[in-house]
Image (cartoon, rainbow, N blue to C red; front, side, top):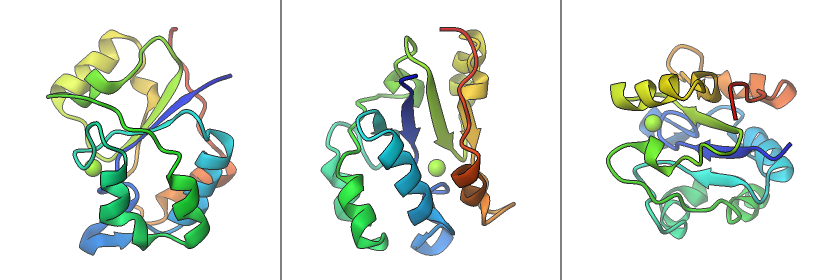
Length: 141
Ligand SMILES: [Mg+2]
């Protein structure tokens, strides 16, 4: 099944102090080998230019992962990140924090389960669990 993957950066791939999150290289390899054509940035660091996050944070990742990350596409969005999501497709959205209106949109569309909460403060190794057990989108499409 084709699944769109949306990735936030800060608090998900990057921990406090601009350090790469634990297991982030393994996580990105998993995501980008399995979903090379359907992975998108969904972050304040990137609106319509996917090279911006790579310039800012690309150097923090291992070399082969940097190559894979060049496949991540931009997601144009304004105001709410949910404006950048294609709701006609199954998706997973890795983010540490949703605003009220973003959460409400997911609830209204019956796809709150597609938000995969990453909380590096509570569990710095959060990304490790997705490597062996990658989430599957549920909800209505
Ligand atoms: Mg964030």
